[in-house]
Each structure stands twice: as C-alpha cells, then as structure tokens.
Amino acid sequence: MQITATINGKPVISEVEPRLLLSDWLRHDLGLAGTHVGCEHGVCGACTVLFDGAPVRSCLVFAVQADGHTIETVESLGTPDHLHPLQQSFWEAHGLQCGFCTPGILMTLKPFLEQNPDPTEDEIRHALSGNLCRCTGYQNIVKAVQLAAKGPSDTRVLD
Amino acid sequence: MKPAAFEYAAPKSVAEALALKTRYGEDAKYLAGGQSLIPAMNFRVMQPTALIDLNGLSELAFINGDGDELRIGALTRYSAVEHSPLVAERLPLAVEVVKHIAHPQIRNRGTLGGSLAHADPAAEMPVLLTTLSGRVRAESARGSRWIAAADFMLGPFTTILEPDEMLVEIALPTLPPGVGAAFQEVSRRHGDYALLGAAATLSLGTDGTIAAARLVFLNAGDTPKVAGLATTQLIGQTPSAELFATAAQAVDGDIEPMGTLHASPDYQHHLARVLARRVLARAAERAQAQPVA
Image (tube, rainbow over all chains, first blue to last red; front, top):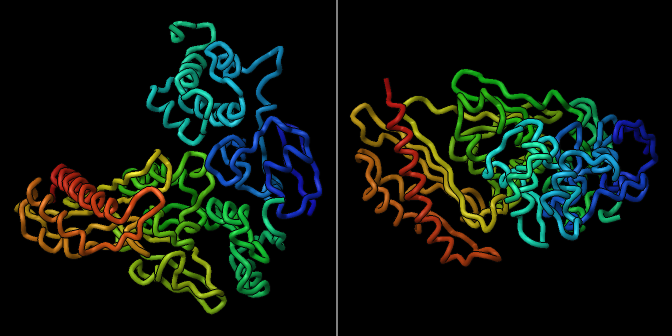
C-alpha cells in the first residue's frame, strides 16, 4: 500500500506491506535507526515516537496507520553540534549509560516538559513509568529532566 | 516481519466498517487502539486474516454529558478521558481508574471501546463499566442495540457481541451527591497488569447510614466479579473501619481468582480483602464529603 506521512517535518511517500510495524518502517525503510526496538510488545518504551505530537509505542502501530499523520523521531531533536536542551541535560547529568532506552525517553519527555515545564519529582517519575532503563536505575535520568526544566546551564540540581 | 500477513482496510464510516467485516468474515478483526491486539499479533498468538482499521472514524471519538450519564464514543482514547474536564467534573471515578491503565504512551493510543470489546478480566474498563452498571451500544447492519454491563461479558476475552456487530458507544452513569466511589489496584510496577484491583461505590442516606453499596473486583475471576455477599451486610449500617473490615472478610465467597504468574490465588484473596476494606472506606469518606442536599 502507498502511504504519505510527515516524518520529522518532511513529507515521505512509501510503499509498505500492511503488517510492517511503524518502528520497522522508520528503522529499515527510512533509515531512522535512532528509534530503538526493545521488547516489541509495548512494555519497554524504547521505540516511543510522537504520533501527531503525542508519544506512542511505534511497535504497537502499523506503518499504514501513519498515512496522513505526523511522526517525530529522536532524529528531530538536535544534532551533535546543536543538542536539544533535553539532550544537553542528559549529557550534563549523565542521564544514560548504554543509551539504548534514551531515544524513547527523550521522545516521551519532549511533550511532557512542553505541557508541564516545572514538574515535581513525582510527576517526572510518573512520566517515565513507561520507559525501562536497565543500566543503572533512574536517579540521573530524573536529575536530567530537572536540569532540562531549569535550563541546562543551572547545574545546582546535580549536587 | 513480526505479525503474520493480513489484508488491511481503513473505512471512512461505521456502515462501511460493518460491510467490510461481513465481507472479510469471522477471522477479520477490528483494529481500534491496537494496544492489546498488536502485541498479540507480534507474538503471532493472533493471526487475523484482515484488519479493519477504525482509527479514521472520528465520529466515534467523543465525550458528551447527557443527563445523568456520560456518553463516550468507542474510539475515545484513554488520554482523552484522563484529561477531560467534563469527566473530571461529572465522573471523577473514571479518571481515577484510567490513570491505572498502563503508561501515558499506551493511553494515548488505547481506546475505551477496544478494551471493552477485548474483555480482558485483568483490564480496568470492564470493571468500571460493571461498577457503574453502565451500558454499551452495538451496531450492525441489522440495527443498533444497548447492552447492559451485566450481560456484556460472558467470560475471558468473550463478549455477547455477534460477529457482525461493532461496539460504538458507551454510557457511564454519573454519581449523584451522597455517592462516593474509589478504585485501587496492586501491581508489581505502576502500569503493569494488576495482580488484583477493586472498585467501590457507596451511597449514604440523609441519616448517614449506607443506602447502597457496590464492590467489584478486577482479575478475581473470568469476568469482573461483583461482591454481593460482602456488600449486602453494609446496608443500613453506619460507615466505620470495623464495619468495612468485617465486610471485607466476606469477599472470599464472591471471587474466584485463578492466580497469575506473580500471585497465587491465596495471595489474590488476601489482596481482595485488603483492597475491599480500603476502597469501601475511601468511597465512604468521599460520600460523606458530598452529602445529599
């Protein structure tokens, strides 16, 4: 089937089989391998992308369902030279070790911070509840979100 | 590719969806939010021959206040209910329940109608519908009919819907002043399937005694389990911790938990007694905070 979607601001036309998952379309057909695939049944959150602005599991949506819709992946955030404030904060606060879960976490947090610019720690932990990190626990991830909320230049939350 | 191959159609109206279902036959499935169906397809536990994608049917995504009930379209997503000022005002129990469903990412996609038609005994929506004695409306080429909650779920993952019917609308009665409600569940991590859950509504008469009470359990049997034995003894009594503790002992006769990977039936019975006590007490507090005028 032919589908047309807006991916990271650019129109994309693609021929897909109905059973192709959105996550696999992004990675294999479009080369956007920043979206990571973990459990493939909606538990880990690594594949989270924005679907019409709202975070969803891209392993639980078919690519054909993106027809006519807007998708944003982690590639839409920043570049190595110009990191998005969230990415800068994860860097500053050491909010990742292996980084596998990070793209899904960033795409979950982007709309969260836009809607809730000054979240409490409880709200941050609740927002992160659908994203599993197996490296080290969540302390530095929470700190990174607090840092992003305050602006990455404010390093007091790191103490 | 994870899922097995299937035919795909995206109808633009309910009538078109119903016609497609008839054409594709019983092995076709409606695709709503897909947050239970697609995982099952990724594991190939389910291999429908065709998917009829309902996500383009915006006519089925609505929340309306209609007299003493809320009318909610079957394609309404959990996050729409969670953030609806109308639901928060008219039926805060629904917001409380929906917040327990999985994670924000799942709630942005999953739908109320999808969950009810799926009829998972460990799901929250069937318990909410049962607790409120709500109704669902099914449509087919033969017409439209309302089905009471008590008649809707026949067993695990089984409803009374006929193969040519589609669930299109949900009616949830709102709670008048003097009625308190509460929901709690226990899961290993927030957002996981609950080991057990409980919802209660409790109405107080003008003299402060209990006029009616309803207690329904999640994951305590093959459908939502209504605790009739435990609540009968509450009628006419004044709410107290002792009263609810005594009533909670009676829930053992109301439930038939089958055990889960992480909870034996004995442990589920224990959780049912604890949660019964807690949700009844919380519902009573809320009823007392909003007395009958």
